[in-house]
Length: 158
Image (cartoon, rainbow, N blue to C red; front, side, top):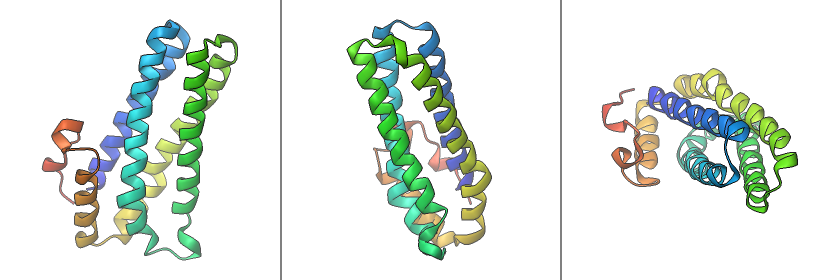
């Protein structure tokens, strides 16, 4: 199962790379669409973590579920920053957009890479096969079928 989560992180990182390129090269109109699409993917990713992975991990962690709590806060902050960027794009504010967009990309990239380094290895150590099964089922029920989302849950094993 963790390989599926790692693939989802890589997919989101690829979308983040597309967003970063669009910040530098795209017209505001195309940037609007890229930002909207990226925001949808980021929201779905956060929703899956919040509803499936984080509750399973928090049961095993003391100190109020640290590092899950920290990742929840960071995830919400990234969502808010992206909304702010989309508002600037909608308003046509190109000036601050590049700088703020680059900061957003850098911090979100670090956050996503941190999942591969910290969160997923932690989950591998702590979660039982039954818990992984519940996480998988919760992921599948969030946002439609895995095939529709392009997430290969049917092929995963953990």
